[in-house]
Amino acid sequence: MKKRCAILTAFDPSAFKGGIEVYTQQLVNLLQARDVVVDIYHLDRLPGPAEESGSSTPWRSPFLHKLYRLGRAFYWVDHQYDFVISHAFFGFGYFPPRIPAYTIFHSTHAQYAEENRELFSQDWYLEVRSLFGFGAERLSTIGKKVIAVSESVADEARTHYAAKLISTAPTGVDRSIFFPRTNRQELREKHAIPQDAFVGVFLARWDLDKAIDVLEQVITRTTDVFWLLVLGSGASCPLIGPRLRIVQNVDREEVAERLSLADFLFHPARYEGFGLAMVEALACGLPVIAAPVGVMRTVGQDPLFRSLLLPPYSEGKERAIVAAIHAIDRLRRDNKLRETLRQAGPALVRERFDHRRWEMQMLSVLDIAVE
Image (tube, rainbow, N blue to C red; front, side, top):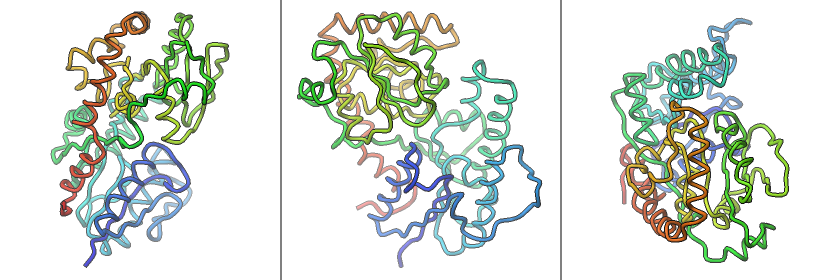
């Protein structure tokens, strides 16, 4: 008999293409390839009648209240499934679980709140840390097996939530899309990027937690760099200028092309659980100048990659900005370093972050036969 799996998430992955939704579709593809029947439940598709509480809500956040109702509604159908998978706190209302349950942690909101505390209000900090983190997210670890996307997220789950049943399955990169290309001149012509420019790329949302304040300062102070901003969802970028090109919401193949035509990736985010953009850039042979967050905490243990890491923001924003400018100047002048990194990045991804490796790790954690 075929196994049956339910996935509890916030948004319909066929209609919304954020990072978790892309991950969800990859997970569905993996399970279906192993003959597992998969049903996805989200805020617009509840699995059963939702518990009503009149006009009041036990949660300060309406979003959390909706997710709570999603999890409670799953009790109506959980007997139809062999196991259930939730993203982060999206399935926290299914507590306590009555069937084998897994929670995939892409980050922890407790740590995210700490790293961004100075950017936002005290109310924001308390809501994200206490309600989303120590409330909903911690509930998502109790009686469920946690799958962390990086060692740093696993450590955060242990430290903040006292989670015990944790496995780590680093997110994989599809190396049939993200690989070093040799036609850089052709790609620059295709995307209207000056052939002789030294090109830096920023690949993220245009939001403060991605350290756009740091990015703006670096762009202003690097007058010899042409900047390509590849933006996803989030606020609109207000920057304009002759040394700047902005594209939004492009598909994965076009992301890979734009990485391949650049000279380096700049990723100054204050917090990442994994940091897929950094690994995709490494897979394309691109040097990565980044804050020591997400996978760069472990990748940066190698002196070669550590040489381009920024100091932690606890040492001051200005120091990170100056370090970024120095790293960019070093890369521009040192052809040997760029070529060394061009070889080392794809080798690292092949060894540690290949998509097939992620598939095998996930199947093992979910106790699904590996052929």
